Amino acid sequence: MSHPLKTYLNETGDNVSAFARRVGVAADALEEMLGNRQPPEPALARRIVLATGGAVSFDQLMSGRGAVIADLSVRLAADSSLDLTRLAGAIACAAADLPGADRIPSRDFDIAAEAAAHTYAALARLTPSEGRGRLVQALRPILAEILKDSGTLPQDLQALDAAALAAAEGYYSRH
Image 1 (tube, rainbow, N blue to C red):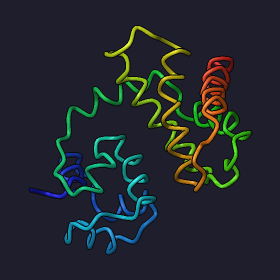
Image 2 (image 1 turned 90 degrees about the vertical axis):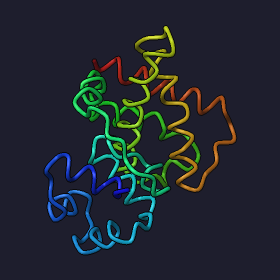
Image 3 (image 1 turned 30 degrees about the vertical axis):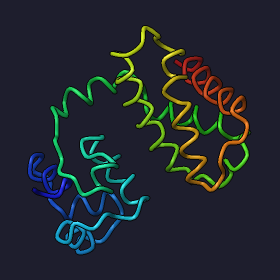
């Protein structure tokens, strides 16, 4: 079974050097990761997920399981209904009042926006909720995860819910 990223690069015609530059790693380091099937550092894995538009998942990179790359164009079209730049800004503004938010690197908000867009699209099949309500559903676990990654476990779930609601409100008020 091929490395999930190698499968992605083959299917998209991308080359290792160009991809390595996009994710901020040396090409030889990326080649080594592809060759020895060792999981990347979590921060690099997140950048790879972002650079592949979610076609290669965090779980695939960390577990070493092979990629099953579904029709990427369908996935990207489903996610394109949300403006990722505006969503990242809304998440950053809403999270600013949460304890530990000052330890979250700004690029994590971009990753959070992409994750929220994918979750928002996936929830379309599971919930009748739309717009703000669905975005709040998508944002709750994502905000919790980025706070955990920053070393702060969210203690106040009401504050986390309020931040998710504020991010959704901030996103849609700028729309």
